[in-house]
Length: 289
Ligand SMILES: C[S@@+](CC[C@H](N)C(=O)[O-])C[C@H]1O[C@@H](n2cnc3c(N)ncnc32)[C@H](O)[C@@H]1O
Image 1 (cartoon, helix red, strand yellow):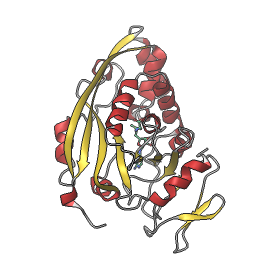
Image 2 (image 1 turned 45 degrees about the vertical axis):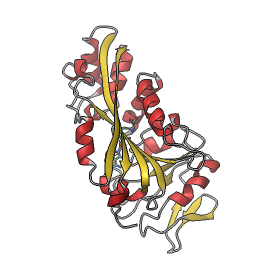
Image 3 (image 1 turned 60 degrees about the vertical axis):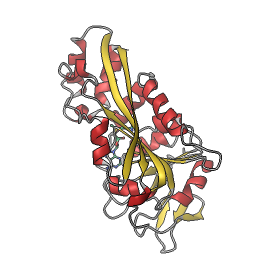
Image 4 (image 1 turned 30 degrees about the vertical axis):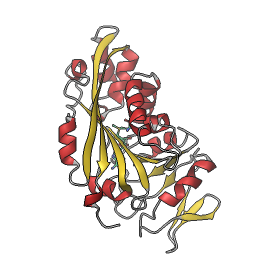
């Protein structure tokens, strides 16, 4: 479960999803705002912060989250985790040890790798939130919808992580402090190219770093873009987990996925190709506080 020590330091960064006011502990296991809105820590250790406009049905289901944990646990995307950690640490100073928020965090694999001083994993899947609650002793897990107003105080966050995840750029600009950094991971057109056709994987929304920079203007400016590539040697079990953790799993049964995987060589060599972009919160385009 979310360690008692993880929610405490994160609490001043969180906001009531109904009224945006500050949250504080009111009872053991319950937090609330001065307006009387109350939120109970789930038995599995995450804090649900759902407002009237929040949806949870877009989040990954139990099987997708289990597959993600299995695939990432195999270390196949370790190079991405290292690049993300390097991008986060570049800006860390003793004065600003860093509050790191990961949007659409899934199992919080990448956030945990950054070893944040204060970490918040936000996801709309209860199954992901349960896993994220166990990811790292300094990571608090919050169940919330990235497409609704974020339950995060304005300008409270030093570093944002957005890794293959949904993003509402205006909300991200609101919660990131001026000068803060967003680390964004996007797939390149060659990412998993060898298996997309054979395994019936949905086309990815491949976006080059340049289009990330455009999409995030005017609140953010691109500081650096780093290509991270590797040739992965994947077993049939790895391939089944890789397909099952993504959107294709919503359209194909486990039997269909297994049959398609069985037709591939063992191991199958697959290209991993992503860009890790660092964008700085532009102080000249601050929205309302
Ligand atoms: C492709 S996964 C990426 C997870 C993680 N960043 C990683 O790379 O391992 C996308 C994640 O976004 C979450 N998600 C989908 N819609 C969401 C929403 N509206 N709000 C918050 N999270 C959402 C899913 O539950 C899932 O965990």
